[in-house]
Amino acid sequence: MKQIKTIAFDMGGVIFTMDWAQAVARFEEIGVSDAEHLLDPYTQRGIFGDMEAGRISDEDFRRELSAYIGKELTWQQCQYGWKGYVVEVPKRNLDALQQLRKQGYRLVLLSNTNPYMMSWVFSPEFDGQGHSLRDYMDDFYLSYVCKIMKPDPAIFQLVVDREGLDPSEILFLDDSAANIRAAQGVGLHTLQPQNGGDWTQEIYQHLN
Image (cartoon, rainbow, N blue to C red; front, side, top):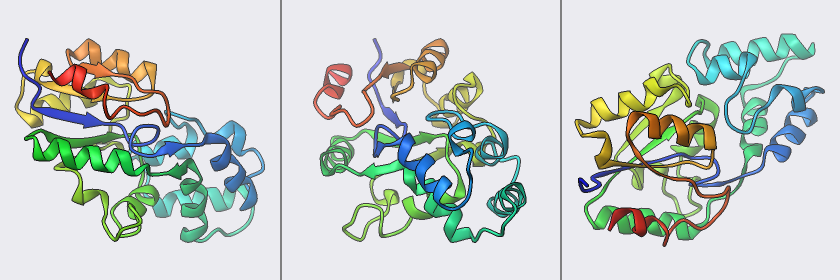
């Protein structure tokens, strides 16, 4: 077995603890009455999916969602809805990321996400200590930038190609079974923690 060189992390459920119901409640609060049917825990559909797949911009999303509910929403209201997915960013996870980098692993984010979420993730507010996720990661594979969403195998192949590694030299963490299966199909090593679960010790069983 080849040694793991790059560790790819999902974001919601792995880096931060995620709450789909809280996101639904926030979108309902800003006027999206059928948010429960529009939002998905893992792979978005409709205009939510169009934005995360990079087919429309965050401004297109704001405009289309405003038209859909019949009232004008601000960018900040849309972000408020999306950030409902976030419960907390456990300090143990951030400490683990720092430790893994010190040990020589290259860390990348591989996430189905969008500009509203990443505006927060790339801000000093992210960890509550004045640091963004850029301070913990070496690179970012974002669905709306790559224009591919998990579990499409193409996004995993993109990571393999850009990292310049054999698939077996990459470990991928995700709480979605479908994403894990897709990554395994491309040849990546995988670890599937539960949403909010503590993976910080178990990961070493996959690295040693």
